[in-house]
Length: 111
Length: 116
Image (tube, rainbow over all chains, first blue to last red; front, side, top):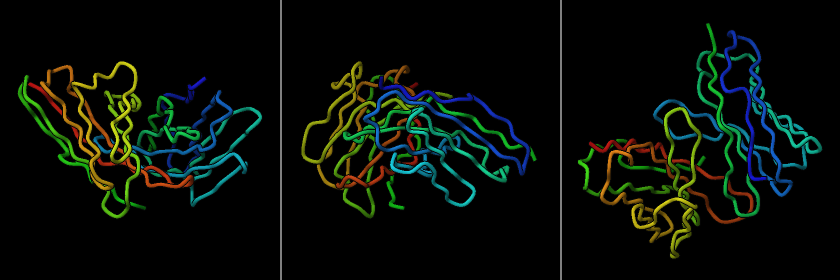
C-alpha cells in the first residue's frame, strides 16, 4: 500500500513535443505529490508539486494532472527541450513527510 | 528555493576506513533530515530519518552501527559510514525540511562514495 508505480521506465520525445509520465499510488492517506528532476551525478530537484485539493497545477512548461478517484497523477512537459533530458521521479508523502518514490523515468529529448 | 549543501561531492576511501558526509541547510533551520542511498539507474532508497536533537530512525535492513547519523544542530547532519567495504560504494543523498505542514524537502547534491 506504500508503493508508487511510475511509467514508463524510459521515454524518447522529439524536441518540441509533449513528454508525459504517469504515476499511480495506493495509499489514500498521501496528501503531497511532488515531481523531481535529477541529472546524472546530482541530487534530485523539486520540479512541481500538487496537493489533492486541486486537479491540475501548471508552472511554465510543466503541468501536473491529478485524479484523486483513480489515485493517479501525471507530469506533462510541454515544448520539450534537449535540456529537459534527465531522470524524473514522482513521489508521494503523508503526515510523516517521508517520501515514497516511484522507480524513475529516463527522459531523452531528441533534437 | 532553500539550499542544502552536501560535502564532499565525491570521496574514495580504502576498505576498512570510515567516511563522514556532511549535510548543511544554509538558509533555513532543518527540523528533519533524511538520508538516502541510490544505486545506478535506480530510485532513491530511504536509509534513515533524523530530527534535530534526537536519535535517527533507521529503515528496515539499514545497519545503524554501520551508518551513523548525527543531527546535532538545526543546520547540520552527518552520515558516517564506518568500516567501509566495497559494497558500501554508492551515491548518498541528504534531504532537509523545516518545520510546518507545508514545507517541502530540499536535496543536497549527493556524495559519490567509492570504497577500494
